[in-house]
Length: 418
Image (cartoon, rainbow, N blue to C red; front, side):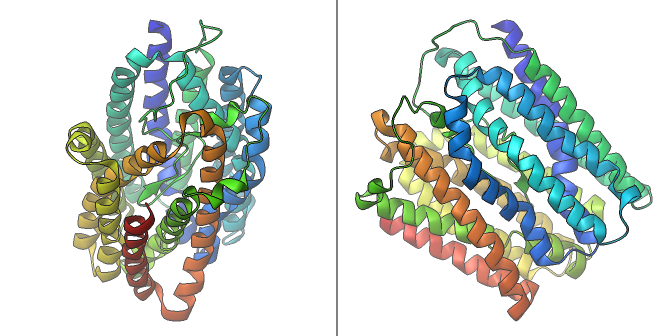
């Protein structure tokens, strides 16, 4: 058990290197190459389509397999994609790299989907319920430190080394972090053949296999339930005829409006605000630290207020990030948005999962979580494609202001149906 904990801690440190470098700057990179809003949106829309197609088959495939072994091999294949991105400037000219990055990201999403499900299940299996809070807390702290230091280092490298060599170094650093993280995943061992099943959210901030994109992370919470079908159908649309239907409708609108402005952020930050990579990395660091510091207080806040009240309140505040970016004329509001965004995302991400678990019966969680996964990816797909269309009609920053209003409207639907 001590060996497993050590490798889980080492894994998250190196994953923080990957997330703070390659994952954090890939959208900025293709924006500097001349990508348009639609091409940036494919970084999230593509993986959403892959997840829609492969998550349920992957869950069935993993049901009777060793999830630790699956985590290692899927992580290896997924993270080799970052190695490929390093060499793209030598293989393609100009905007040809943009679609190359999009296609590599799309291919990475296939093993990434398996990784997100298998790691979620493996973590739940090898960490006993009584140790989970301690292990998760230490992993979240290590992740915050690792991501913050890495993104600040990358900002310095990007400012002081010429383009595109600077980004190649950053992607190389990320690829190395990903491979080291994968090595530590290979050292995990499961001692108990029949681990205790606990139907509660884990609370781990690490999202392997799912991209972090500006002011949010994709949520793999509950994906481990896709491996617990036990011969029952996973996708049950009849559940939508119950009270769970309007509840999922509110979540669908939230996810759609959440992802609608995301492809517009890199273009606004780079082309409208003309921020340097060092300033962008400082914003990333502020986001990570504020997210972690607020997550430390979640237990106390949850004990005082219900998960529903936290969800609704944080959903209303969630529109402040695109509002501040839409109003920004320089780095000041961008940095303020990073501080606010990390703080609010820590609240809303935890509340989304905690409220979801409250509404899902314990004996039917696999089917309900499968429906939530479908809702999540449909929302990501719809929002990611709607954002570029809206920006073409009215411009980048006006579209961000509308995105802010729609996020506020999502809070209204969560108030009514959540």
